[in-house]
Image (cartoon, rainbow, N blue to C red; front, top):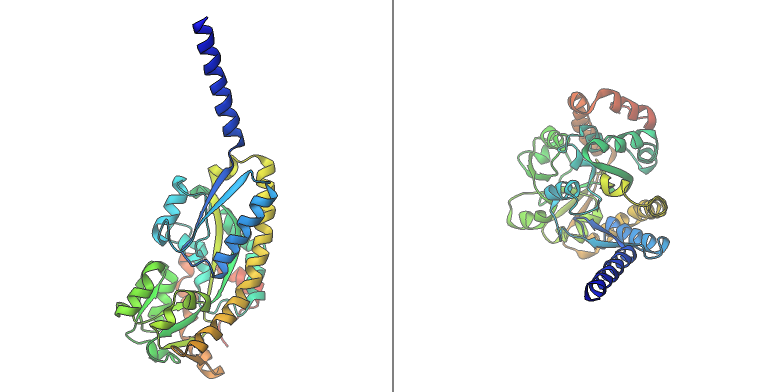
Length: 334
């Protein structure tokens, strides 16, 4: 009798544990390296809201902004190992991972505006690029805009010669390295979380960022000049661990796809407005002088940097670069 009672109790405990596990939400740890009040931070919050609502609580999204869990160089490995399920790294991060084609987004002046950009990120070229991540154990879900980059330093940067000898922080990208060298600057690769202190202490002299990153990371406190150069694009790919994504119930994955689609629309709508607003916030701070380039100054910077396209063609693929030229109407000479 005792044996039967013990077996019955054990079976009840197993069934109870199984029921609990079935009811437990699927947790998505979503890690990123920027502040919550940036376009990416706000878009991540929006995705969390939509995902949890549309799965009726079957999914719980845990957000970890501002490098709380991992720095730039660590987060992709963490995703591949399954320590986190979702990231939104900048597109420059995929070159060092071995998918060099993504460095096409780093080419200076390849996009003049968001309309040209979205022809690529929201079209077949962008979709094909995301597909290349599959071999790395990653599924690409969407592109999120941050914005167009501006140069900053403690001296005015308006002509190619102004960059000579400056230590300029860059992401780990061969294209960005070549871009800075084309200006006779000294590129310095560095994790985003370390940039403020490096600028403050003079380890680097300047950097490039969309205004939203520049302002929310308080770089206006340690940089005297911000040049509205719009010389390059900084965007993100929202990615997930492929094994995790493929293992989700089909209805959950469909709901998350819809949430990501709407979060992407939200992200890209707010990116330009946030950057425009943060330029004004920098202006109002009276800590950083904002410099606007005239057409001749912009043309001089463009002419100095556009040769990087040809220089990087063997690395990125000339066919890919040419396909973007055709999509956007880009002409190397202006």
